[in-house]
Image (tube, rainbow, N blue to C red):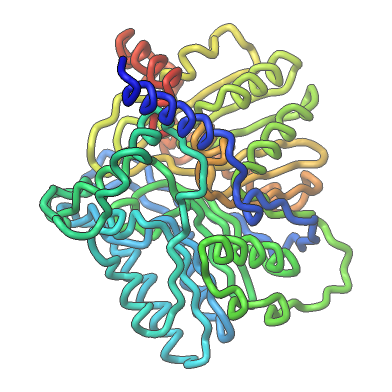
Length: 475
């Protein structure tokens, strides 16, 4: 090998290693102080879509109704941090227009209150990574909203084998100009450039889904994306001083992405009523990599006689899986509801990672470890919620999947941790949500573990192990 070849290999290795260990922006990986929540002001939100025998799935959705209601009560400011705010990929099917509805309710509120300060924080995926405008977001920006596309470049690289090559040779293509290639969202969407394709394969994202006004806040797993309208999701609606932490988490993203934080809404603008009653729930905000630490602590601290419930779209992080197995072995009842990973926006998927992961967990040999599959149809079981049921119950929910890419500081995430007595109304709502999905009292929400477990061939399982070993995954 000549000197040039050796130099390229050395630079490639240095690039690969550096972007795995580099220091992240100080604004990220935020964990707030603990705040009081009052039980009657804390609401669990859920979107439930299940397969049915008719032409249309059964759809019970409340998350974006809550989003619209919170927005319609705002007079001072709206901060919306949303991974997908678009109708991309929805052209070929009759999906509910949730992105247009959200755009209109914000627009109407801006017209009603001309001084309303609107901030939209989002991800470049809405422009197919720079190849076209994001029509929903662009319309609100023209009306006066501040728009921040989160800066993803400082994040660590989740697919180092590819991204190191991209950083050395491909990033120079850029994303604008030469929109000659079909869009991965569908043939009816705007064509994109080769540079946008290259950037897409980095698999980085601002994956948050949050809404904050001076009155209330919502964290959820739901995207304002028409083609995701049939997904089943989870969320929480809160009031009170926790809004300070939710606002701080978003201010940090604006800051590190180069936005003008001097004009960003401040805690002084919040409308927080004094409450004489003693608090019933305690909450804090955890973002990005700190979510992993919180989830692991909840599972590892669980005791015999307690219950762990998990509802998750992607489930593949090794430390979390091991902690779940250990909890079951020491007498904790562990029940997991997963998406079977069979479809994504109308396209077939091979059941990776969830079916492959659970196949290796020895479910049948563990008395206290049970798995059921969500009964999906047009959408996905897209929820991300961990629930410890006990005398003091704990909930961790928000935007993050329990996968290496999500938990490993490769993307921007936001979750809320809530703890409190198991008899509080909020904790009972969470318990009822899981019990309903697990026990199928009125519909077939979930299916037996064996329904999908043998559907994955040995070749697919081998491919999953190779992908996971080489980090060549989107999860």
